[in-house]
Length: 465
Image 1 (cartoon, rainbow, N blue to C red):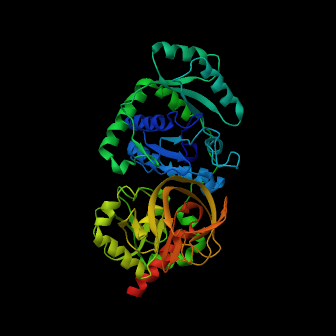
Image 2: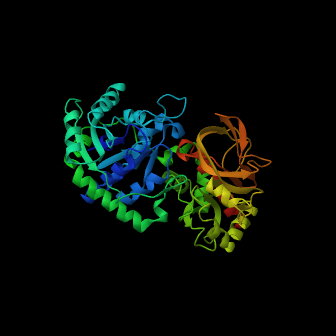
């Protein structure tokens, strides 16, 4: 079977809270335990669900976001992630037809399913209905004829009698029932202010939860029918995304970086769990030696570090521990002062600030951070206002903002980005080699960001001899 014909399913729902993550993660784990190589994917910008997907499959969780990366990259990124897989499971976002605000179907699960030519399995919360489930499913099946709604999994079923009523109602819908799952809180995943608690913070408990999800799916779902459905897909005509080919337009810069082989540390651990898998791949192809650093545990940067990437996460949860690691805070401040490139997004921005809720941080940026009750959430469009270590002036990007913290001030004398949609304002900080912002950007959409960062680190490496 060619890579373009990889078996695939999209797991969707009428609305958030129906159980998409439960079903998708359980299916991934159940098929993996059955001996299949399962490729996990998530529609949208979310970082947390892919962590559970990775735990269930042993492969990197990949995001498919048409707003951040463009519709033309969805199939190539999917094929890149699914290379060598026997099955791909794609978890949707929100309701099946919900996408970016005021953008029609853009970034919706339905749009991604159409691009991937993948059958959709709808997870329905049946806890407060019986015959009405058939009307609901009929509406979703007929709304967009280009979306192939090929099956339903009934979730939160109350009893044998309840299941019988639901199945009898569904018999007239023309959409087969491929599973029925009873109400069960044993495999629940704790949540807090930005969603589920990431895997890195509760790995042992998460492993147990994923195992229980797999057992529930085996018991309640028709796995052979689901696999047969996944294998009924046509071949995709697209070529897999290739980070080396993406960086070809900046080949001269990357060639210099490859020769210097700069060492770039990428923050990880429980406090910094938000990162797209393609970022490390692009850094490596651009010529960097990518090494991990855990700001909760490591008291120094890896020897020879010439650049640093600090993605998103929950530094506000771990502020006391991050603050207590004074040696690493000092090392990060020293690296930034040397002019080395430091790219920081959201959690990284907070870590570079003077403090979070009064707890001292790295002090690289002249700003203070604090938690609030207000959620800042949404897609953004932005432009680089001046040349910096990450982006050339005029570079246009699409990003995502997701936090309950505020930073005062919210921008430096040289802001990182000028936001152009849906609101106009400046945001973030550029100082020396530092680029820090609340904005999460998917580098697969703008690979030159990785090339520019590595080239800047290579110059540092060359200067140090």
